[in-house]
Image (cartoon, rainbow, N blue to C red; front, side):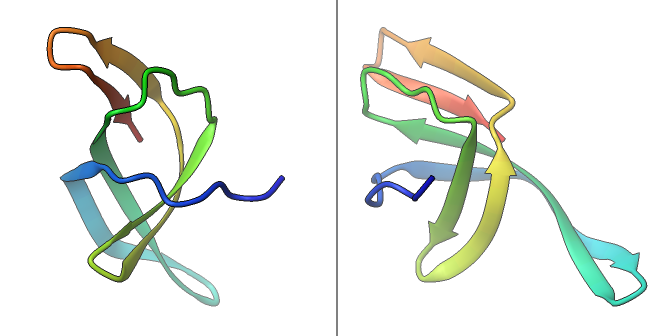
Length: 76
């Protein structure tokens, strides 16, 4: 499957460490809370970037509609 067009969102970093190592390099362990204005969201993975910096691809852990503010909160 291909990626959709960029979706404007607010990204809050919960945790972010680049201390993970494996034989051929290192990896990033991170968690983000994302707010979007879409009414529905069903993706299983997201690719995040902020201000031109690629944050990586992440599995969606939870999706919660915030109906009082008209947003959807996504935890990755």
